[in-house]
Image (tube, rainbow, N blue to C red; front, side, top):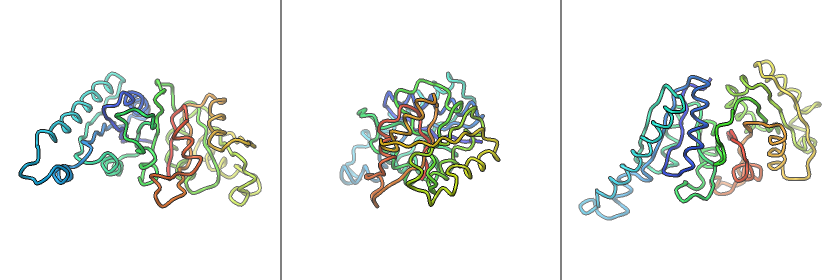
Length: 274
């Protein structure tokens, strides 16, 4: 089960969607929900940026602190309205990516928002957390309005280590789901990873964990990412689970095609792990 969930909180109006998703999971799993807001940089970094410590405008850095505190107060109020009983707020004087990576060490799940072009959104945050973090990341689209996440789930299965880690990170949700579809797209292209009957071994593994699973094999001309989105849409799924991939040493910049498509266009929450 998830016992500690971290949710990224900032000034963006898109925070509402991710808090809704995090609060729903926290209530379902009786988890402790932690809202994490960052100042955007540390005090030493701010001092170096603005000049010598003797003349650094302390009041301007205090504005960053005050903004983060205000975001957290709004989070606390909203989470209580959504029925979360165990709550905590954490303000971190650091850059958002480093702050969340550090806090994620002590949680079971990290919840953040999809990149959506909002001025207050930290660009590239979901992919950075997925590629560099040690916990699964739930990426919530701005259109999310509180639909059940754990009722129906689609799992993208390609036999990779990344997909295995994503499944492990999603197990608390999968075990509760009414319906889980293990989706294999163009499995014949990766026959060496799937065995004689693609999907059968993973389906058996999930079944032993009490997951009600169905194997779905698709042959698609479209990209795998778009095919998974279509499967999730047609299934009425509330969650898509998939591994996160990078094709560059600069993984926060260049991602694999499936990961990029899902982070850009998925209309439902996506749980990822690398």
